[in-house]
Amino acid sequence: MDLKEIGQRAKDASYILGTMDSQRKNEGLRAAASELSGRREEILRANEEDLRLAREKGMAQGLLDRLLLTPERIEGIVTGMAQVIDLEDPIGQVLSMKKRPNGLLIGQKRVPLGVVGIIYEARPNVTADAFALCFKTGNAVILRGGSDAINSNRAMVSCIRDGLKKCGIPEDSVQLITDTSRETATGFMRLNGYLDVLIPRGGAGLIRSVVENSTVPVIETGTGNCHVYVDESADLDMALDIVFNAKTQRIGVCNACESLLVHRDAAERFLPRLKEKLEEKQVEIRGDEASRAVVPEFAAASQEDWGKEYLDYILSCKIVDSVDEAIRHINRYNTGHSETIVTESYENAQRFLDQVDAAAVYVNASTRFTDGFEFGFGAEIGISTQKLHARGPMGLLALTSTKYIIYGNGQIRK
Image (tube, rainbow, N blue to C red; front, side, top):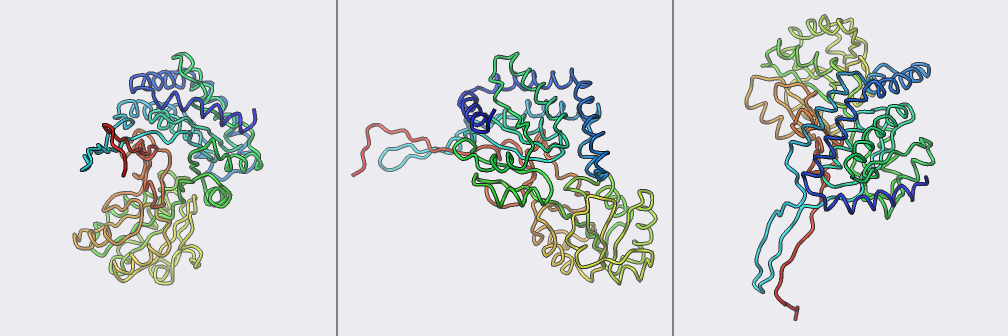
């Protein structure tokens, strides 16, 4: 099937989905979730084949973790779908209604985007998350996953389509592009007239390629060079737990901590303890001269390290003299994703919240919480680091637009 045929099928399905009521959409979601849960062994077998091939290619550990599906992760996907079912359907909401002097009633109504394209790498969880959120908001979705996850994606989309078919809902509400060639990806990015928006999920290279090559409007989901700043007043036990969690819980995710800033007055008390703690996971710490003066075993950081998303057991570390210096450093090198301060100072916390330019800014918590599931969205379509249309974890509202609805009684413009 060529791309235009896929696009037309999605367009046709979108017209039906756009008028489908919440009860019917929830019925489809339940059926899809039931198929995913009931056929987990089929999905796991497909995923194991993807993992085998990825290991043969020498895929990095962080990327293997993104690719991996387990029974627990599949149940997490199903739970996420259940959360989406429970969320209020935004489609059809009338946001405002005002009467003009000429008697016209002018309002805004929330509507689907139409056809959403998702282009992503070896993250099979995106397959189900993207479907659930797009379907709940009345959007058809076309998925183009990476070659490394093709077997997993095929199995999951097969389950979802079978679930929809059992409900009498158009299977083409979700379609998977199985040709993973670069040429097909480029063609997908230029599917004007069929795609209403394209959302990339993946590393810096993929996102840059989509932004540079797409002729379809793009919602940019960014990479994550996320920082933890340990302030002079920080509870160091808390700081230790937050850095350890943010860096090591999962290394291959965009909300993992990649850079650490420590106030000079806390460095000698904190950095030796941090080194000992991170040795549990064999994390390499690359420090500036000041931090290496405290812990000589740190590797030397280069200028490049301050802006790098490692997706590995590596952490850059720099000592700063104030919260203002920390904020300046973060705003220079971050990717607009997630930043956190560990502090007991209300003033410094508020300054950090006000002045750090990022989609999610935390006080005394791990950056790992920047996630649609954790934010109560059920799942996420991605984490937007741009400022137009949507920013941060994108749930249902980010997949909607509005249209004006106008009631008259014969008015004509003079």
